[in-house]
Length: 391
Ligand SMILES: Cc1ncc(COP(=O)(O)O)c(C=O)c1O
Image 1 (cartoon, helix red, strand yellow):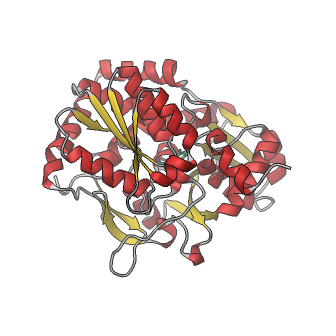
Image 2 (cartoon, protein in one colour):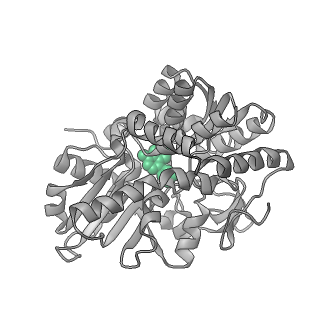
């Protein structure tokens, strides 16, 4: 098992003994059901009728005029719950049901994964507990309220930096003593094997649809596909379909927070070193002694010191390029994009839009860029208002 789930030197399975049976049971169930006709048919119906797939590929006319090339938006923000997280939650939730589990737990940062898990808990009638850092409970309070409305218990975690890393610590701790009836529904392509593989599988619908939509609408593949990278699930979800298309550039955008040079950021691919956290080997923000550094980002969903192991490999093999964008540019684009298109982008997704904006008038006019709009920005209105009051 220790050699499973490797992406080059990254990934793996670094967990306490007590979790090994639970992860092995999950891996076995995943491979038993992920191609099973009944499971696939049930999941596809839920994707369609519950979540709202397929999501449109929208040509952003005014934003394209502004930047001087063609920008298409993959509208994951239109999904039920307001983000791509529902794709993974439906997949893992259904797996939990097939496995006979009756309880769900999850960690959350921005609250989008917590909300999606709570929705699925209600849908399948499963008792649900969500672990969330105390800072995130405060800054994403609308989502906390929605989770509670769905019937979930939200547990505020006050240890450490009181953000996503600490929520995962607490969820793992809880799971260790409740593995028999509880399924840990992990939110991104990080964590120990089999999570990076399972979460990727349930998010690949984004790229599969986007690739087909490009061929139908534009008659060719895009030149660039870009997505924000927290743990990396929405980015892998769209990149995966284009990885073999060598002409398509893949750009992942990390949070540079207050600036890489200040150390106040959450950009492990841009400024981290290889290390192990939460069961996986990855690029990680750590000091010389291997202590995890505090992270900072205006976007709660990207505020994590590590990143999915497959992204680490895509970086090292240079198949994808990773850049980082500062909070100020994110706040700027939130305003610019909303005024151009009448679409509020999540602060997470605003990172990739900010990178696109930084390329304005630098790319040929016929360049086609696809942006994965991973979520909608309604949850972020309070943060934006605090930083940039509307006059
Ligand atoms: C809207 C949105 N986009 C992106 C992310 C980051 O997660 P990932 O990198 O796994 O897509 C989050 C996390 O909460 C999110 O809410």
